[in-house]
Image (cartoon, rainbow, N blue to C red; front, side, top):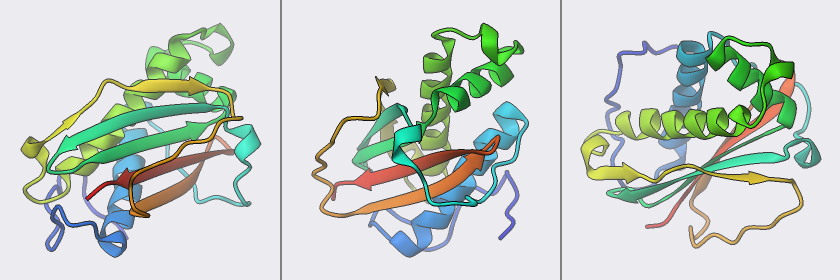
Amino acid sequence: MTMSFSENAHPGAGTAFDRGTWTPILGLATREVFEIMLGTSLQDPSAAKDERRMEFTALVGLAGSLCGVLSIRCSNASARIMASKMLGMPPDQVDNDCLDALGEIANMIAGNFKGKLSGVGNHCMLSVPTIIVGSDYHTHSVADGNSIEANFEFEQLPMCVTLEMHE
């Protein structure tokens, strides 16, 4: 499914959680951010995701007409490549800038996603990103099972974007 970057209204998309409509929008929002901000295309995953390889997680909260959390999980190597593309420097020279870059990418995906839902953009605020380092953690969401997930490969490394909504 190809949509132009300028398309920001999707008929039938509102604030009521709709997995069938929202999942492709989340995928499109993610792909657009990577193409525009990092100059790279995301690929569909070639293998099952390996949670152990995703030791960085960025979280962005949504409040207002949408309430929930968007997360992006990836490896240290992925986060370094993201930062290197954003900063124009080699990945091995990126330090903790990779944490800021990952948080900014999560923020842009959340903003792009909410902007694609008709009537939501100006009525939903985003939190400052929070970064978790490490893969041995558990979360408990009050999202009542209202979650969608988009899996990708970024530079041949697994990456997962999840949106958990609370109605």
